[in-house]
Image (cartoon, rainbow, N blue to C red):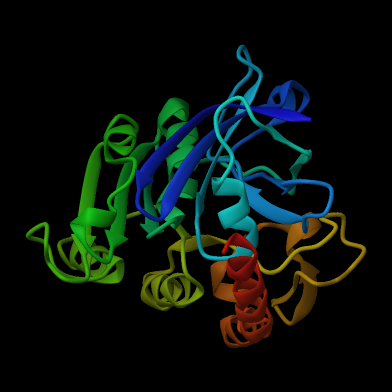
Length: 278
């Protein structure tokens, strides 16, 4: 059992939880993830590690309340316990050769939570980090203070322009590139369509681009094959070969199609979940 040490609502639909998991915290690195079960009857769900504290023995996860499991998880309070919390899983981010280099980290929506540990690790390595994050509106902002502390330049855009900077993350990145900013590497984290758009933008500039994929996972050990993606014409499993890949080699069309496979089933599960609460 894993105790919830801290719970904080970042806004109406996004929650931060710090969980006591000392064995996971001892080995955790940026880019990795955990798989948890809320209780013994729960499904196994992956969450990217948003932060870790080896001294405190804790792992921080940030999640959006979009499905039955995340709503059950959000119903827990500080002092409550999570049944299973396995990790760290996946390969840590590779930052070799990026010390002292110019790096752009692009985060879309909840992907901002994953962008933070990446930026933090690179900043501590001595990289010159620009962060570009996008949200639908300013009411959905998360972690801006944390992001400011680990970058040289933070650019925040909104779909509706409610913060005075209307546009998408790709618009902001395109402006940077057209203004002569030269990046040695770009990391994109967020919705598949956004990551694809970033890769399309960076390819003509020959900027190496890493994306973090989070397809449906079950066991997290490469056994079930549910998280398969096509990279460079080869089948890869995001849980053991990733979750990070060369974005210019990812078959995004296939990945987007597979991401929609279980929407109807999830909707039915949500309806059953809602009924039990009445």
